[in-house]
Length: 621
Image 1 (cartoon, rainbow, N blue to C red):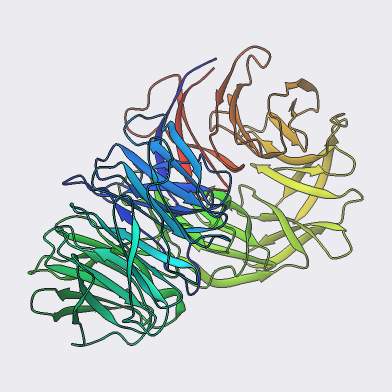
Image 2 (image 1 turned 60 degrees about the vertical axis):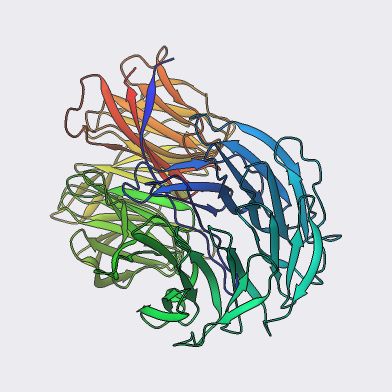
């Protein structure tokens, strides 16, 4: 086996849900720029300075809901919808799970550590109880969380002794607990609707509560008594999150009225407001005070709004945009960029030469899953989606106004050297068609006798994979007369599965086919089978890609792995990148070596169901 190293991880952004507060957490280490959050079955540790240096934890079986760093910084606790809490090591690269406990019988909405990094309270929606306090190392109970009649939305533990814990729920109550072991002391009735978030100040002197009644209430950290209610320039919608600065004198609130407000706890005054555009995607559903100068507020649409809160600035400095759903297709862009389409129809542009991460492609895009993307020789990128539209993307300006309506659901996309786009589409009756489109005009349509499933192109050669006959059909495209002539039909791939995807090398000399059971077959351009021994994948092959030099083939599959094979020595050498696309791969492609690219090394990127894009440097076999 050959070696590989991960060079970058471009993370997904948090998943959001209407009416639910999204919990964000920051590392408690001074000078850190890391924010942790949940999406799908992953936990993402985002590096605000350089998003490509982010990491992910993929140890959960069910959908994750919340993650919190321990005050010591050595551990992270993350929870999921089934009531499981996993505590894992944040220092070592292998992120080994230290302990795992099933604490309640349903979704966990929030977690809180005590200052010793020894005790954890998990709270949410269980059948027999809504919260549980336990020891990190043994899982033994350290008290009871009681007093609620509905789901608990938030929990916070006083960060200094004597420890107190507060929980807030959909019953409009805040319950005050004393510990350890934690036991119920009293109920605080200051809110009239759902309480969405509670937070103790870092010095333990006070705690805040915010809720759907738009109230911001300050309580004593010693006994829970109300000390102030902030009525100066109040929010006009549900407040979903609050967060303190390290000095315990200021805090922020994020609201469904599309604003973030900064408050002074001592004078009980409103200091400033940041307003976002109208509309549901800009409702603010989560926040965290990251360090002395920066706060992050999360929009319903998934955007991270990074705000500089130093007194001389007080401005929105940047917006971090990334997929919230799985990445379904990718295409290389000009220079050091690439594009990724996601399952909700959005397309994102990534710049590998800078530290900016990804940005959403603006303009009138797709309304549902982006099923395929390709780059044309003229520098444009094309995408097709389950909204049955072919769209065009300019790297500098986003989606162009033009779009082409397809007659069926698009499955695959490829571009020839003259800029003609070939789309494989399947209509409602199950019949397939390969349509040629140039300048948003249909110039040719092939109605094959077989069921086309995948298309690949290089120069003026077009290859189409048949799902039912398991054969690859080679065509020559004449751009002058807009005609497609069949040149050769390969023999059947002869496997238990059906062809799912094909790839054509840049020099047009090799064709590879992947099938539904994990087998890859390599042919030359004449249709001669070179190898059928590439059977390492254990699941459906979802993507294949030849490198620009046409010497190696990369593959990914639903089994989450990535393989790089040598065309010159197909029987002996390959590179295996384990778990390159957690939860299943959907796309693989080669990046240019860039600065200082070493001979004998290549850069491969993989992406899939977890919404992240990972870049690997592999020693070519």
